[in-house]
Length: 455
Figure 1 (cartoon, rainbow, N blue to C red):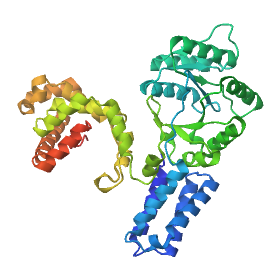
Figure 2 (figure 1 turned 90 degrees about the horizontal axis):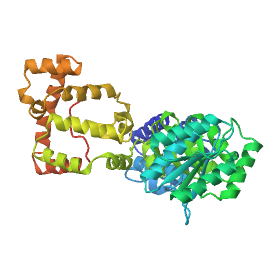
Figure 3 (figure 1 turned 135 degrees about the horizontal axis):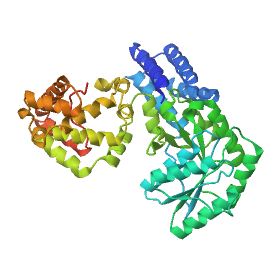
Figure 4 (figure 1 turned 180 degrees about the horizontal axis):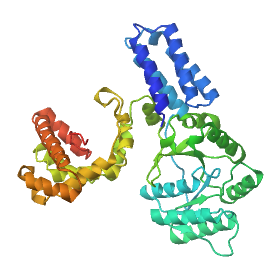
């Protein structure tokens, strides 16, 4: 997400750094480039106009133009204004003082509404809640069937309704009653969608809103549709009064204009973003973190949160001790690769890294997930003794390992060579006091500490 905008903004800041000093002229030139970058990213023209005006007002001040590092000051100003445009602070879900909390999920057909309902239910269950889902789309049986399948996949209940419950209101009322009886504290109501906004749809949604007074009325929009998504959100808010937006398919939207526009145009916050097809690919939206990602500063906090959610703490502590003792075996390497895979696709992890120093360009690295599968297969084909002591792996053992893992002897040799180089590097890194501190930090977060490449 935001790849095109991020690349262009970084080019603007690089040009500013190349100037001897900041002047009104080169600042205006930079603002023109920022404006074009935002418009090309499909950001709403009114949002662009306001954002540029705010940046100009702050960047043209005497204290910035005469500062010791004016280009850095400008980066900070742009980041602050992006955060303000995106919503200033994270907007959390609201819950009723007396459960169950009813949340209506609304949007146009094809926006990812039903899938987002399942993802949100999973997120809620992972964060201390016990949600129940219900589809009230009485026009498309396939929609209700889809939610039932999703419910099984995420292992959460879906209210199916009785033969007598034929209207959206009856189904939603039945679900709420069932939630009370079974102790569920949240009811997610997946409403019907249309290919376009019409009066029948709005009447139906208004009836549901009036009957339940939902704590959240969340509009689901497809980020890939750009400003069409923003216009739909604006119209839904005008007629219904939405409380927040879930933007789907953000991982496939290289421009990101909808994310930057929706808060200003609707006045309502972006609460979640869908960043993949899997049910755990729904993230709470943090304006400050997103602004940092747009500017190439990465999103280390989100990366740490992902790690802490998936990494086994005891295993991470054991790995820390092994690093300090330089006792890192092939078995440990395999286990760390498996841990890393739990966090998510490697290309999405690399995109959270800051675009600075040796990490610059990491987000563009072509990660071959199949290569990781091959490495794990090679190590799995070794005996426990071989995994713990690579020195005993002679020629005949290498041929047996290659046959067992379906690779060539050369690929086995390559892995062993990288492993021995990495062990040597780790020994040098963890030898002194600073090295021990580094190993401790890596172990604390369970981060992979295998410096060798996989290709």
